[in-house]
Image (cartoon, rainbow, N blue to C red):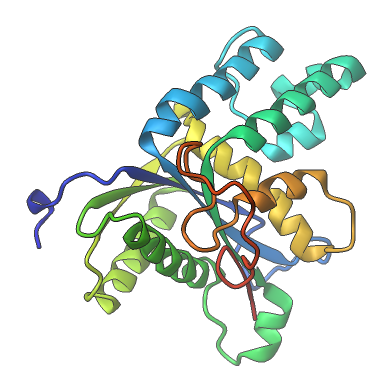
Length: 261
């Protein structure tokens, strides 16, 4: 099946990571690599998610050029230095939590414990490549469940440099070649942080709370309590309001959240 034979999917996928995938230098404080697939119905993205996050930017900074980045928000650095004001910070955090809670998206995260990964395998697989494979498998199952068989779905990842992007694209192609029976067409595109993609920012804001939960599951984590409801279960969680189930379906572990090894 050629690209020209495919119609566009109703969905788009944004990808972001938390932590780094290096196995040679592992941080004792954050020995984890997490890759997040944030899956959105395009109509929801255009009409609900992007306007809501842009509105939050206007309310907080007066313009929409700020790129929401979880690390910068936590460190209150750069544009986020304004959050050192307690009242403004409280309003912003409350607003951001409300936007994410209301946003209709489905989340799929793979978290690799790099220390255990190195201990268990003589030649451990690249954490990014391994995470990409797990997330692609789940995204495929999700899209088929959403009657997107044979359609073309764009996957948007943040550019990390020419060599890194080329390596990731090679692995992406390898995974698709190994799953040639998939009746679906994925297309990988790279975007720079400066393009200010709302979808990539949403994926970033969702990835870190999940990674932190995996590292410290007993610690209070309000942000995870919010994004936990978006984790993929049976292919329905995160849909638009018209199609969402009235109650949360349990059982996302191993589906919406894959922890390895």
